[in-house]
Length: 293
Image 1 (cartoon, helix red, strand yellow):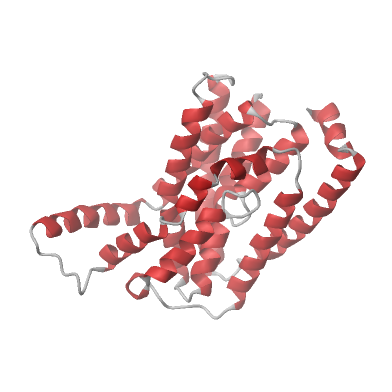
Image 2 (tube, rainbow, N blue to C red):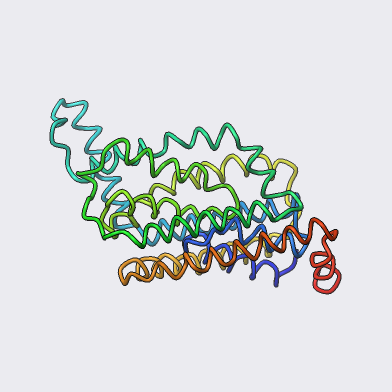
């Protein structure tokens, strides 16, 4: 993998990790048509995800810092028996709901190998179907009346439903931000709160995935030059921050429906191309690899 592919992959990861279009789906398509699969793509994927993890921490640092402070205050109140269980504060309630929303990630852990095999196989039909699912979710979410619920109105079943969307997001083509944001909006939550909750709940999930994947892919050393990895990380970080602010603007101005049309159209095209590739023996992939690989 060279510098050009590192920059392109970093841009794709940075933008699509947070825009509701599925970074894993777009990277899977890019790797399919360029032939960058296997160990190299796995290593680079970990690095790119680390870049976008830093990006979301930077973009939401004010809310994250309030949650951290409230968490330690919560621990102190528990030990000093001053915790008001009947009327938790806004951030205490948000912390509890974030913890509950992470429980469905057990599904991801159990089926980790199956999910990884979908992304690494030489087939894009499933990616296309998953893009369609993302498009449908976004369309439904942008069709309902804006909600007003926030952390204090959130129930455990709401947190679990949003968490379930995150649990299936490793499927390439299912947007993590798109599916969790859509679920929150369909459940009647305020748009700004839905964005904050969706992105912040993704931090421990992405961090856990990085740790699990890094243990596997880095155990035998680096197969990609370090400067290439650094460039990919920095590009994904910069474009990740830009994408976060873009999502905030899109939600605030009711323009999220654009992405429902995009993912629906992309999904249908990918399914058609995928079926053709499978029947005809991958002529498009072979052509692109021979001329641009």
